[in-house]
Image (tube, rainbow, N blue to C red):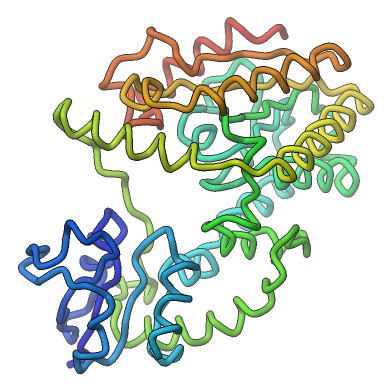
Amino acid sequence: MYKLIVFGTGSTSKFVTQLLDNNVEILAYADNDNKKWSKSYYNKEIMNPEYINDLQYDFIVIASQFNEEIYSQLLNIGIDKNKILQFFKFADLYCNTFKWNMHRYINSKEKIEILATGISYTSSGLKEEILDKKCFKFSIGSQDLYYDYIIVKNIIENYEEKTKNLKYVIIGLSYYSFQYDMSLSAMKNKVILYYEVLKDAHNFKDAKKIYLEYEINENIASKIFKKNKYGRYDLNWNTIILKGDENKCYIGKLQAERDCNKNYPKTVEENKEIFKNYLKLLIDNNIKPIVVVFPASKYYTNCFSKRIEDEFHSIINEFKKEYDFQYIDYFRSDLFEDDDFTDVSHLNTKGAEKFTQILNKEIQW
């Protein structure tokens, strides 16, 4: 019987808990939120991480999007790195979505007229199969403007036959996109998805180290996670739909504050240069850029930073003066109801179908 501590009490920890094999006992859940300490979670106590070393455990699983901070925190209190499973780093390499997407695109026999890049809002909010033109999505959660650009640049430069029918690129942006560099963020471990194919880690200096960490992660995973009948780990999960206005208001405020907690002038300047190069790349290749800001719920938009929003509009207006691209913004649209969203800021299938039909009418084909 392996004794485990799970670090995190959000949706990822729920998923990790369900993944565990029968030979595992969870001793406790750890969380940095002191409001949760001593409360019960899955019939176990939520503990202050400072007291982890008081328990006799075999492994700790980091089940949180803030992997890097938590990993450093654990090392700083003397935890052996060989006892730490970094769930997201393990899952990202085990199921490399970008690598699979690139394989599908290169081997596709269809005449693709549209590529769509972007962060998770694009991934969840665009139903490419109902667009009026044949579309292929290169959009993954946490993806930033840099990798949007590098992906399309790589395709144009290396797959000429695949791009001869390409006429449009949808660039899915968020109001905080210019403030965001994935390779310097809490989500920098996701750089490895792209590094495997593109050999480009942007500003992340430890990409190769992730492969060494993967060996540790795989060793622990093989001991504690159950496998399906095909001998694989089931690492796909669905986002939990929020219920209750009070819960949505709280989560919306929390998510907006988290997304807007950014003030990085150097990142903004670099992203403006990336955006310029992206637009120029498309225009020089007779491809129409279509910049799209996807809808979000009122629980999120009502709490969004005016500073970040105004900065974004200022940058877009600046580029409109020099470059020809279509701009479609439905961030604060009142056309979408609560049941169009899977959480406070992402469309569900119903909402995505509705918005894609709107794009069919809005896009100047």
